[in-house]
Length: 452
Image (cartoon, rainbow, N blue to C red; front, side, top):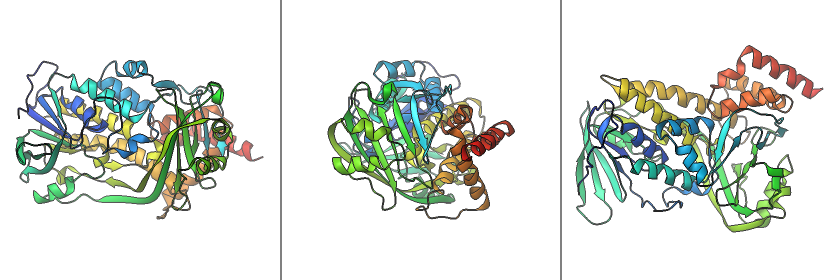
């Protein structure tokens, strides 16, 4: 099997001949786009079968549930693949202002409507992944191969020299593929820790939070006047109202509805039970829209037992090996951060490869960890507001959650606070921006007036 394409241009600072990406999900594809400007050949290896159309893959069960591209992810994908946003919208994806075009209710508090200037995109996960794959496949120095299972790394305590690959459809049982740089984007089930252990590297410290979140998703056809022309409605979890859900338009004209509960609070799959779960939400909008809607297909379920944050350092890794996206941090998908964090990480990787002279892995980890930390703390702090989620609530978390309760009340009164909140949830600003004096004052005054 030939693993090379003729290099067709586009590299600005080649670091070596071959780079390999493990995994052809959205994270792996975006990593390949990042690598394509600095390596002569980029090979993406995927164990699953890659469909020719925008359909859900067997190895990506979460693809059947609601997905959104946050403003930060939208900007990063456009940066990596110019013209991508226009192409996605041309395929039917929905865009709009995150506050003006979507209704939000957080822990029972409805966000005051306004214009936030925060643009998001609603599209199915299969459509986003398919379009990214088409764009990356067209890069002249990138090759994507499916039915390839990577079984281990080859190298020593300094660097990797390649990977062992098992062909799942005929061919030799195992083949060594050389590489000058390797990115692991195989998701939360990544084998990096075991593989690196065989090369003498220690396992990184891990943080885990047991969230035990279960999803249920159905598609519906709604009347054209549903939600008064808005693109969706999101019900965010909180201590007094831990159930959550999102309903949004899809590119095929249907609406996707994903419900989520913690612990034993599992959303039902049957139509009556599904709607009864929706009826319990603190705002009636979603139930009113769905009561007369036509179900499309069967409901599906997905469960996330834990979120995981792996604190890799340069000492834990070869100098030419990078864990990526969910292989570093797997978030609670309720908050819709996965695709966007991966896209931002890809821009960081590209920039580090362009500028680094000795150890781009060290530079990538330092910068990527800052992005990941903000997203991780934002979601973990909110999960720890939920009584059903076990775990320590140290002083920092208790303070953050006390402030969050005031924030929830303030967003129902002041659209400017709601806009600041959405900038943080879309990963445009770090969570600390909500504590800036001007914003904190608005939160205090608005929440105080709300309780009178």
